[in-house]
Image (cartoon, rainbow, N blue to C red; front, side, top):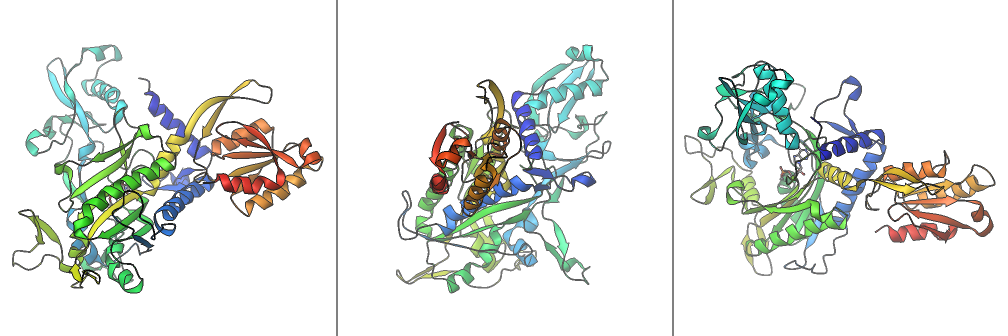
Length: 548
Ligand code: GAP
């Protein structure tokens, strides 16, 4: 079966990412490590630019003197950089120790492990034999994959495949309850040759464990790599209040690595085991929290659009009541239609959650659970707190209204790697442009926003003689002081343009015979393909102006 168009598009994006040094498999020379990715020379620049845009637009460049359109009031923003390993009690109080898990099943035959909720399939009958054929492949590839698996299970030749009777729709193996789940005894696991090889689902905590200290070994020495950056912000809430002049409402932003031992990392960098998050914890008065939630949803949505993601491939999805975490009073996801997903499916880029006072209270009082609609301290069989909080007072005293309260939290939580992947996928285009002789030439181009582009410009001497390389090198040095750029004198100008188009470089500057006469150069625009003649001395200023 041929692959659907978008999967082959995804394959081409992955291939470009590797070929041009954006993203490599981690530890590749040792066969790779599933769920871990390295960023190459162009990739590291792209990712740094993305994080820098976020930091500048959300934190460093925020103007606290004005009220942004849609915001209930002006607000302040500040930043933090917390450790990856924190006190183990943090994760007990936050709920991650008990609740941050996925269900997994193992196949006794293939020895493969699957996320239970990622297996799906269909009932199939051949002659008198019936089975639920399952696959871990998602999107448009799932159904063709099932056909191949059914052929293998029923031991059929290709021409007999049409005799298989399929019933019902493609459904998940795991239902909402054990009663509407597919009986495991009837399921044929992916890569298994018989039914009933899957184990009962088991919980698998996604936090990576480590041990602290040379003499570590006991159960209590266990520590965890953070699965989100957010908790470090809550722990430092009081420190920030006491050491800076911020007043509620204000936000604290942080960018950093997070780790999740995902059972089935997949879809390139989309679900990785080590990734970076860009999170804001925004602290506000309980009465205003709903309005701030709306504000952050819109502000974060607009951020992706401003950096050029195609609006038609984005969606803002408000969670249904049943989907909400027990502490959440509202969550919306910003999702992108990644090419590895079937038509109509979206993958999460960012979640914006209204978390109420859950986090600050958890770190004051201890682990909270919801009972009769209220968050209460979870207790053990002796009636004692299951996990004790810090006991520190994390409430806030408003010296204008003379009120004390525990601020509510709005959390816009984005993934840097997922955003890089979305921007790469969105920027990837294949088109045809005229070459030097006017003949059409196929090109692959990354139409990245100039702020995100790894290189902003390439400086190209037309030929390696007549003084052109010297003039080009001088211009290169002048521009490089202001922005990342590249000097390239190798090959025809057409080939050099093609190399820059693939790298997403927005502008190419060519130094030619005319430059030597009148000190002008051609400035080529990657997307419009226009070529304008501009004075060489104006180049740096023109690019700086366009780089917004
Ligand atoms: N503090 C809230 C929190 O961590 P989340 O929805 O679990 O919420 C936030 O994660 C964002 O982090 C996601 O929207 C996604 O962009 C990114 N993310 C989460 N797990 C990831 C993974 N395994 N690989 C890459 N990015 C991930």
